[in-house]
Picture 1 (cartoon, rainbow, N blue to C red):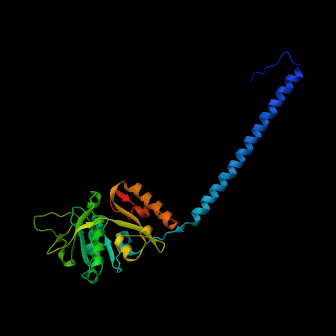
Picture 2 (picture 1 turned 60 degrees about the horizontal axis):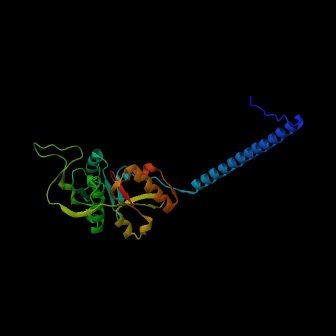
Picture 3 (picture 1 turned 90 degrees about the vertical axis):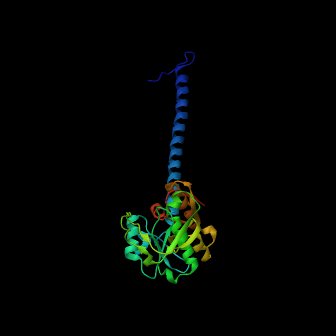
Length: 264
């Protein structure tokens, strides 16, 4: 028990009065603390409600559920669909199941690059082909290497052969290319994110420029040192700031080029 000091020079009633006054002050402090705690709880509750209301006001993003959404994809300025494999299985699937005679095949001229198909590419304009070349290069291992440009070639479907030459080995998702290739030399690696019609859109920046979309409405990616998960959070934050939207981080991750990025 705490010790109580008694002043022997004072009467017991005066000693008692002294401690009574002290107890009143302590009681007032306790009551004040209780009131402060109560008020703080109110403020926290109010802040949480405000944050929840703000979250509810964010525009919801739609998930594209077309047949091609499992691949890397975009639509060119003239609305030609472009699809690219995310792995060896998808590279093989794209060529075997989705490449048709009126299409064009694109591939970055590096080891480790996706098979890229420009649908109805033989009807496409040069700007559609250039955008497809940027897309093909940006999702290749050239991006992983951190280089700013790479060469990309384009061929017709009947030049893409599934089998290897006698005595040669080809890994899954790899193909032999026969005949002459059309090259897009020193293709710049760059990809942009934006929001259109409540949906995440990812494409070469030139495609958005052709559509008259302001640069301020884009989140631009180039090869860089920012680790992919960290970069995805930066992209998400920029899209929220620009469009006041609610986004699933995984939707951003699955649309990003491989490895590190510089986010602008």
